[in-house]
Image: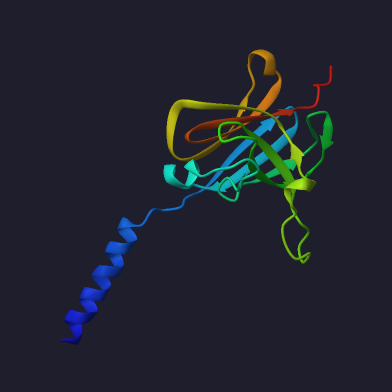
Length: 172
């Protein structure tokens, strides 16, 4: 009898693990013009009901995303140096978002820095394109008006937000 109960409990646990959504830890790296960047986050499934209630000022944690920068970049004309930053997306409206880098709070300081201490990225939002069923973050090269820059993109459901990072000018 005990073996049957133990077997049922074990099978129930295994079934729960198989059916549970895995939150995968992903890391994307880039080395551009002598600056190394490492973007890390957890994947999340898109929840249309939750996102339908988004109001102005809502700050999305982007899967607890962090960006490690080894070098110096510019964000909207402000120099940002080596360090670790939290990446957040802030709703300007339900369909317009901006990305922000917030310096990580030092160890033992009691927590995260607030969005008011962050660097807002020059951002562009799009809705209705490719449907991202899970949160997807990426670092890519710019093109057209953003040639020579790095694009940090966040895709979630029907929304995509891209932030622009300016790289150092290559030495001649």
